[in-house]
Image (spheres, rainbow, N blue to C red):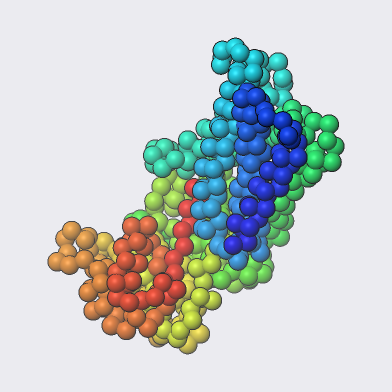
Length: 432
């Protein structure tokens, strides 16, 4: 509600500036009307792109209240609106000028952009935004590696910088209005400051304070690897079971991007652990990383935590490497005196990492659910199978960590068994 109210207030404020600067009492000719509407869509795009960046600026109190997965989801949705408004802005400005000047569309496009340096750089920024938007479409995202998508996405900051100048120096509602120019500039400076502080300066301070390195690399199964990390004052990170960090390993093949991995062993003063499945190029290469490698960590993030467990009993379901955060969460809940059942869905017994740590806890009941679905007589995560495995699941808080398909199927089964929505918890780690 607060986010929606903020977005609405920003758009209303931009519309008020546009309205005040639009001639009143005179019917605008078609060309001027279309141009004016183009200016309005451009101002809305300017407000919303700042909001879109702020959603993923990693502001701690904001992320803690909402959850990074929801913020990333809102960021994606808002990105579509920004892209449509930006393209509409360009089209309406060119079309409005063409109607006024009575020349061809291409001649108008040339006269609007080339003679005006600020507009020309804004066009380059717009093309970058379009490229980012296209790369984020589902069909394109499936074909791009995370690394390519990540670096293409970072050009959004360049695009915003390139488009800002023409708003102040060529925007009809800002030219000659110093106070409005100052306010609009303050909006962009505040956005830049949030990014600088929360995505650069604070992570850098954490790097210098904790000095994290790879301590050991353990092959848990053929497809799952645990990375033990050593540093200073790691318990000051205030990590909760179920949370994750963005990790950048300072080694060849890992420098280019930061990836989200959940904590499987909560930090002591000098040690912590993440457990990672080989799901892509980056995660597959982790098992070959050398001890002693420096690590840049950003976080912790996430709301997939024990604070949502309102009852005294919990069912935790993991798929594959999802056992990492589930292991940490199971130990915390069990140590708090709760009755904990852990289901681990895996193809075979050889693909059950960390099972000994779960079997060894007296308050945790560990149930492996093995086999490929098409080889089994019944779907192991269908409602009848779940009820047979955990008869009292209706009275448990349920935490799910696995693939989107597993999460969706489990949620559907649990809802069918009468588990209320507020008792089903899951979180997406993907940043794209």
